[in-house]
Each structure stands twice: as C-alpha cells, then as structure tokens.
Length: 422
Image (cartoon, rainbow, N blue to C red; front, side, top):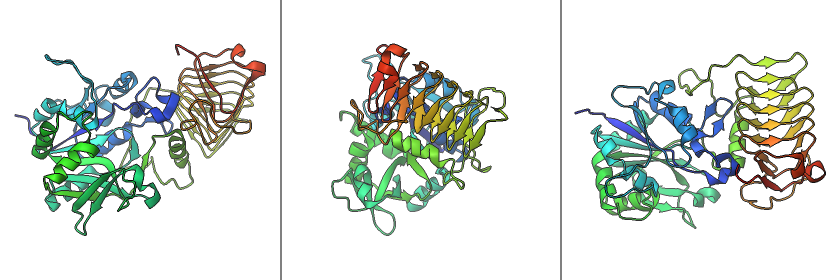
C-alpha cells in the first residue's frame, strides 16, 4: 500500500462573492494576481516548497478556469506517478449526488482519496490566501508538541478579531478555547484556516459529525475535537498573510507588490512561486512611453504612460493613454488617449479610444455598496467598452456594452452596468 507521511487537501471551491464581478465566471482561487499568477499558485507553491507532494484540490464553483490552470500539476512539479495533484470535484455516488456543503463536508466526501495514501497527517488549506509558509516547520511543531490537531494562527489587531475564528492558548501554545467570530474576543490570535490533523483524529471527527448540515471546521470539527479533550495546539505565524476576499484588499495586496521594498517578495530564489506560464514574447515598451513603479507581464505592449500599477500578460496600452494605481489583467486591450485611475480591469477586456475610468467625483454604488467601494472602478472579464465614454468611481461594468448604454457618453459614479446574459 502507498504510504505518505502528510498529504494536503486544498479547499478551492469558493465563489468569493465579495469580489463581485471578478468571480461571476470563475472560482476565487483562479483570479489573476500580481501580473502573472493566480491566487491558488501561492498555497500550491507552498506545498511543493515544503516537500508536500500529494495535494487534493477540492473544486466546485465555476471550476473551468481553475482546472485548466492546474492541469496535471506540471508547473509545481506535482505531475507524479504516486501522489501529485488531483482535482476533486463533487461527484455522483450510487445512493445520491450532493454538492460540497461546507469546508469539512468537502473533506468528508473525499475520505476514500485520503485513505488511499494512508497518511499519518493531513494538512487542510484554503485556496484563497496570499502568503508564503513552510508547512514542514508547522509539522515539526505538531509532532514535538504531541498535538493531534494544530491550528495555524496569527496575531491581528484586537478590533478586527471578531471577524475571525479566535484561538485562546496557554503559555505552551496548547489551545484552551476556540471561538468562531466572537462578539467580545478574548485573544487576538486568529485562525488562518490552516490545520494539521493526525489522520485518525480527522477521520473519526468527520465520520462522527457527518450528519451536521453544512459541516464546517470552525463551527463543528474544531469544537468537537476540543470538547473531547483532543490535544490541540496553535502554531503562531508572523509572516505576510493576506486574505484577498474583498475588492479593496485584493487591490491593496497587488499594490503592495510594487512598493520599493515590497513586504511580500515575489523574487526570492529559495521560495519560488510557480505558475502555469503561457509561451509569450517579451514585453515591448515604446520609446516615448513612461513606466514608474509597475509590474509588467510578458507579452505586453506599452505605448502610453503607466504609474504604480500591476499589468498582466499580453496587455496592450495605447498611445497617449495614462494608467494610474490600477490592476489590468491578462490579454486586455486599452485604446489610445484614455485615462484610467484606480481601476481593476479583468481579463480579455476591450476598451476603446478616449475612454475615462475613475475620473469623476465619488458616489456610493447603487446596487452593492458593500462590494464596490473605496473609489475603485471594476470591469468584468471580456467586457467591451466603446470609444468616447466616461465611467465614474465605485462603478461596475460587465458585458459587451455599446454607446447606447452610456447616456451622453457617461456612466456616473456608483452606477452598475451589467448586460444580461454576460
């Protein structure tokens, strides 16, 4: 029988609804990040850099882009005969067919996959965070402390603690209590959604709790183990970790990459971030273009001016166009004499000539102010924007739009323009 010391189960089925139009056609872990990567590249690269060579990726919501990106795992050296990467969507069983209804339910439905490797330990990961972490160091801590469950945690400001699962630990890091999103937190150690379980402990907990609706680690499995007196410890992480769950945190995390001394460094030799790279020509930067503090992806052609922005691969920016503080994803084309300020523009977008984005006074978004805020302009995948239009801040546009969609050539700040069927 195959035997693996530790296998990883990577939860990548989430919709990421707070990213709005960016995740209307793809799972959150497949969203582009940092010019050439996708969010899922970070936990996958952490696995291979930590010596974890068997990873089950649990997909569900809009998985097409994600599945195509992962393929058979070649970029991460996860194309193995034994182990490697396996994409695990929900599937029909003889008695019934059911979607994954919670984080732990998704793991429960894949007991057979885990069993086939007879692991000593199972590492549970989330597919939608940006960070670098050596899981081997966490495993060493797990073994040395005699834990059956180890929860990775990191200190957060006390006023933000109520948004997280909070770990309360003694001086030996043993967990004495765990509270899911408490109103009055007793500690500022937030669970990162990264767990190491002894396989027997995990299996027993999943089978015992399997009938809970929307079976979840934070709500059900962790409290169950704690209630039984299972030895549970917390591994404190103090590196860079970013949950890019909202448009503004996603924008901020991208902007942090272009700081003079970036807090999160994509260029370290010893901890590389791997991704599926298309074969693209080098960048072309025209002689009269201007670029300051930017990441520019391969195959991009820059004829205008770009400041403080993250530009993906295969992007064209026309002559006389000025881009500031923006994220422009792969294969997008922006015409001549445009102005783009603080925008998130998704993949394969076509923007005409003389278009202005984000130049008007700010107003709250009229449909989803909790998603579209902070003065950002968000443009969905494959959107078409005609020549000579102005689009304001906190607005969202998606679909193949025409001049008729813009009365007097304007979409005011805070407006939502999503073409049906797009």
